[in-house]
Length: 98
Image 1 (tube, helix red, strand yellow):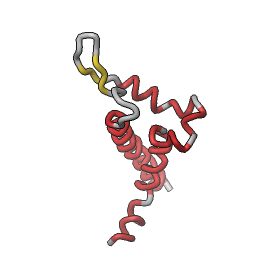
Image 2: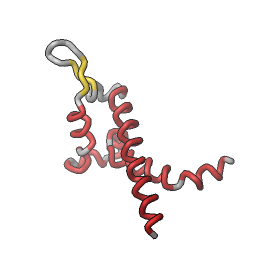
Image 3: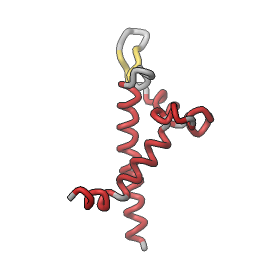
């Protein structure tokens, strides 16, 4: 029982890291939304602004419009769920292809 809990917690941690990276890169290079993670400062330097990314990630928990299908690509909760399912069932998914 404890082993299963450890595996699930490990998968959740892995999901958090992977989905954060994928979402951050997608949002930064998405033509609809850009300059979220890398922002120009007043000195014309590009700086990393994690606060903007975190605000965008918690947006679906605050605002209803993120749950419209046209905004699924910028809904972090959707990314998290999909990545978690893929990680949780990776052995079953890999058996299909091998």
